[in-house]
Length: 328
Image (tube, rainbow, N blue to C red):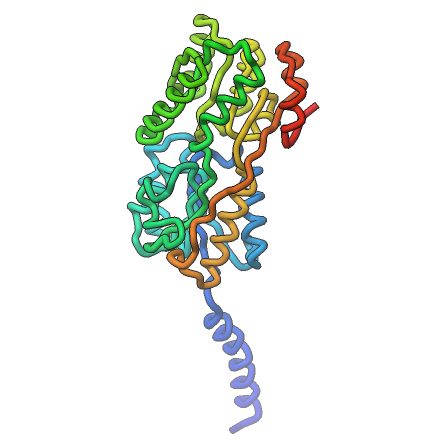
């Protein structure tokens, strides 16, 4: 072989070798993220989700890609968004904080692993066979936002003893969950001797109209039902409650951070982190059927003392002592 031909052949092999090596490298796994709100309102929770992924060794853009789909409060879009992620052939579908999204993902695929987080019993929702042995292709986190409705309402009464006429916001968009919440809050109000008025806003404009109705009815306090849509509108809710001087209780501490009076429930940020951890474990080869549903055990009471003073609400010393955090 001539020297020039040998050099050309060697050079061609040098170019071809790295191309072949790159072709043999495994493709980056893709996580499908199905969110009930919008990117703008979930920045905090996305940071927690990515933190959970990081705890298992995955960093977005480096060794894992994430396809985001946002329902922007329109739960009827969940089926189409879940089906789109299935067509994308993602490795895992993460559906935090959204029973409609979890049900949509479960209906869309029986093979792609699903990591959900819901505030109600996932067995009753049909997502898993049991808490300890999920079976099927789904597992996740149960953070008990619905189960502590009575406790949250009792804390509101303890904070505002004069609250006899109480309004309650329940989002009708998730009909099965709304019916359960309606029954639970009515029973709790009856036990506490409260007169309850339930309103069903599902848009920002309807929230404004609902507050107008509360003012006309001269309610003493407001109970915001646990729901992802209300969480995305927490600033609006806090501002309207302050404008109309209505003491309000919510399920999420971020509402209190926004200026709301009080919250009682589990940490949503930690829940998103746990969803990220389970997503990472599945990317590493774990099967959903072998990962028991994580049940939240820590509940936090957060009170905004500044808002209480603005509303003329005197926080009982015993309640202040029991609070996990008091915002001054």
